[in-house]
Length: 313
Image (cartoon, rainbow, N blue to C red):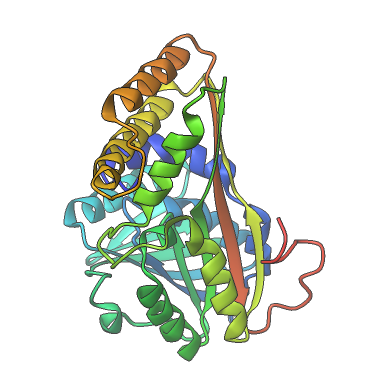
């Protein structure tokens, strides 16, 4: 899936929140004034901000300054609206400071600015938070190797800490099983490697590539699985996911059918698979696990023993 619609982002929020490897946040640090500057790339409607700000507050980041960057002006407006609603519902004080939001919570405060930026071409326009945090959620797998190299170069030059969450890594388990599950997922994973706006995407290889790239730059890297586990109680999310897989598989199957020497896997067979999986969702028997990876990286992250590493799962 690479749908950035408000509907899809809202559907996935609960699954994202449950899946995140939040223990990694404890590896981050603020400055001696208990301040942290955060740059959130591809922020969408602000789910990453709303999830992380309280966790950063809990590790001592009492003064947070967030810049939330995205190209979609409508999503940035939604970010302001939903963050204001979330602050009010959470009992936090909310103030407007010009175009910025200010949230005062118990033990921490957060200033939030939004910035409309085309991340595919305008990384040089961003103000990289020196010694601060660069974060992104569900973004890395959409990017090309060249773009990710540029990103890590900017981050390393500014001494930024990194927290990248929910990077799809290609692992999928569907229950009950269907004979064509593996073939459809392989087509989906091939589709994930097509251009998503940042050049030919790394898709399922992105998380491992970034972990290795950070290590090569001298970062200490700690990573963990952050898989979605979607049960029968989430039929809308399951249906949206299966819809996306069907569309991606059909598009990729059409492309591959034009390649010599490849056995075609036609749209009719994909539609049969789709009907069977939708039937399982409607019967409340379907369970889907989707593999993701979270990682934190810092130049001086301290002892990483006990949390795992980029070489372990």
